[in-house]
Image 1 (cartoon, one colour):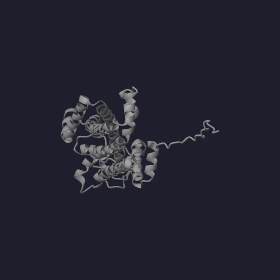
Image 2: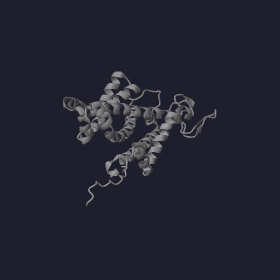
Image 3: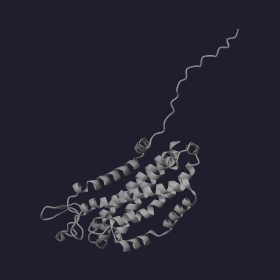
Image 4: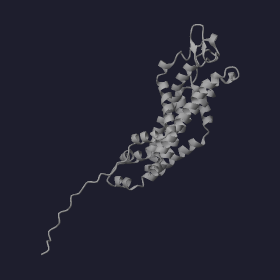
Length: 305
């Protein structure tokens, strides 16, 4: 007779599916394969460390004036033994010390505006993409209005009314930055929310906040990081331009843009007054852009195929 007893099922060997790498591991692996990105990271870290330890690294008081030592060339040694490695400006202030403290203003403003702009823009983009309707229309028309207004005209008007200052500059630049993040996130949300797992989350009763926080935001954060990196470079240049025009942080606070402006009238006789702050802006922006290019390559989906 044929044995009709059910056969004993073979032992099931569990299959472990490979897990996706997290952001930190992807960053590390990607940067190690990108020499240009490592160079950019090194430049950015160096400038950040200089800004953080400005009080310890600065050889002189950045706002102390010594008229008897005005417009001295790099390497000048005063009668009392003070060495000015990068020379002095028209008021006898140490350019190296002003460069070091100027990094605080440029980086502090850049990171502050990016953090505020990213927070506002990501929130608005999530709201516009997930809720839609009249709310989405209002948010996106507001973004379009901000983009269409010339930045310099608004900057002159705001500074004329409220006066120059770091807080006014942060608020002004944030107004023009958050729209970029909102537009980026809203476009990504429109494509992500059509996925099956988003529909499944809504089907089991998940709130919009939980869906946005747990499912949508992790999938749109990578381009936000790339945009934030490039925005820091743009903001450093914007601060330098506004300070150069006299619309930035008022003196005697040292900023790289104001130092460039101070050296305009001494290009022929004291080239070092404007050369070194220009180099500081250039190296910082180049470093941030190198790092941004590396991050864009790391988070590009085509690189992970």
